[in-house]
Image (cartoon, rainbow, N blue to C red; front, side, top):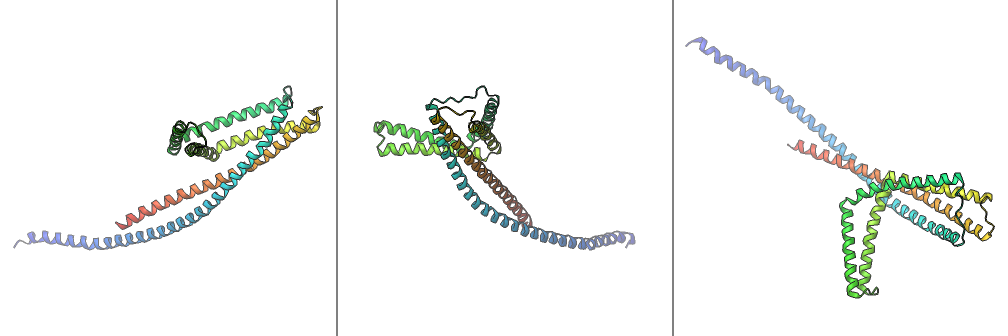
Length: 290
């Protein structure tokens, strides 16, 4: 037998044996490392799940706060509307009494009126894109569809009942139209209320209007625009008082709405954090299961 021919297989055998023996520790190390990574991942999952539970608890508390604030905002808005009635009534009484606005030649009053008009233009400019974006949403389109259906039902009911407003069908149809319109108005109000730019523009507008009223009230108190007819002076006094109450109600409304926006944003941030953490847990759990 040729010793050279036996040497080659023996060398190969030794090399394979050495390779296998070397691979065993590496494989063991890999398994140990994989197990360690899996344990770390489990700990991370546990921590993230704990954070999810904490955020869910916070979100629940904030949801309750939000519901309470919605009631506060609703009451504040009702107060503003209620405060506006005396203003309108007093202004109409002054008009009926033949009391002119006056002040057209007063440079300061002209400046204040100009500022108020500019504030109005800025407010309108802020509102339009918000409403335009809202009109593209599916819920708004659905609300418009419900209004169209309600109006069609009202037309049909009017034909069938001869426009008899006392008929149950006409009453139901009219109520459907009012409900559909109220739904659309509520959506628009919420969209405008939640927009920071619109809210700031509205507050600036109210402040500009208040500046006009405050200036005229100061002139009235100083006697510079007192009227010889005491009845008109009394009407002016009632008008300025009503305006002050309206402005106070408006300020409280703005404060309530700002608080509501803040809480709503906190809720949205928590919901996004919960969603991101939940997705991460799902991915890591799926990877560990493989």
